[in-house]
Every structure is written in C-alpha cells, then in structure tokens.
Image: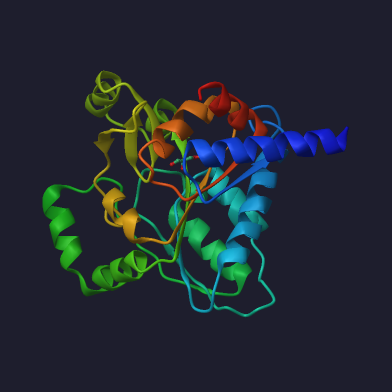
Length: 255
Ligand code: G3H
C-alpha cells in the first residue's frame, strides 16, 4: 500500500511538471483542506527544496501567508553555513502580523542562521507616498537586494479568500468580481487564464521582475486552491511547485 501511494505521487509530480513546464514538482500526501498537518508537510518539503538549492550568500525573498509561516516553522540551518540573506518579496499587503512577509522573513533567517533585511511599509500606499518611498536610500538598497534574489518562495491564495482576509475595499472587490479573479500571489490577482485583473500597490518585487530570478518556488496546497494555483502557473511565472495530493488531483483533472 505505501509503495502504491508513493508511485501515485510520483506520477502526479511528473504529469504536473510536464503540463506546466516546471523544473521540479513535489507533491506531499494528503489534503491541507482536510488536515492541518499536511500544511506542515508542505513546509518541510519546501525547506528541503530550499536547502538543496542554496549556495553561499544567496538572497532568498519570501512572501507572507499561513503556508509560508509553516515553511518558516520548519526552517533549519543547513550544516553548510551558507549565510543566506532573507528579504520580504513585497511590502504590506494587509495581513495579520503572523502572516506578514517581514515576520516570516525574520523567523526564517533566525532558524537558518542567516541574516535578514525588512521592508516596513504601510498597507495602503497612495501614488505620491509610493513615489516618495521609492526615493528613500534604505528602500532602494533593500529593493536592490530583493531584485538580486536567487530564490523566491511564495504562497498562492484563492482570490476572494485573500481579498476578504486583507480587508479589500468594496470597489476593489467589485473589480475582482468583474475580472473573474480566481487566484492571488504577491498581491496580484489573476483570472483563469493567468491574466492580471488587479494589483495591490506596494513596494517590492513586481511580477515582471520574476523573470530575472533563477528559482521561483510556488508553495500552495488544498483542493480548494487548485484553480488559484493553475491561474498562477498558466503564464509560466513559476519554476518549482510544492503542493499536496488534494490540489494535485484537481490540477490533473483540469489537464
Ligand atoms: O498570496 C497568497 C497567500 O499568501 C496565501 O496564504 O498560505 O495563508 O493560504 P495562505
């Protein structure tokens, strides 16, 4: 029985890798929607993937969310003393403190025995405030570090779950409905085709900038996130997917 299960997961990994043109796919058994321990297993699998990729003095950019918090929880120092530098991928997106990229970033650095730099930004930035912030030397410096990341580790959320959790305004909710948003990552909302229908204005990594980063680790599980995951993978924003059986089965059904 365990062998059969293993075989099933391997088959799913291969299918997803081919379908979405990914370098690597890891599928852990179970469904996050059913059992919370599955999220921890996703966290563990992600840490082992990060440790495999890490080289001396690499910069690792991370986003927020409960899945990334689970990754931070599992983070450990590789025996190689690589001194990774952790940075948040983007500024404030309206999450509770435990789910914020800054919190997760600091925790990962501590556990990995590395360093971190943070971006303290208000969640809502006017155009003027945004331009002013962009001129701040500290912000510029951290932005340069973010853009030089070797690895980005990020979560993917179901669009309306994320919009509600982040207390999105009525007018922006309307925009998401009209645009048929299904997924969210980095503060960008996507429709089923992977087109951006809305973006939160915050400082940090912009979607186009992902192109220059060697490894984009997309980390998300739960059958309810399948559409959201597909919306992000569709436009080829990702290089490695770490997910669970629940989401993988739904993703494969849609192939
Ligand atoms: O951007 C996506 C969200 O960070 C995902 O949040 O991991 O709590 O579902 P979650």
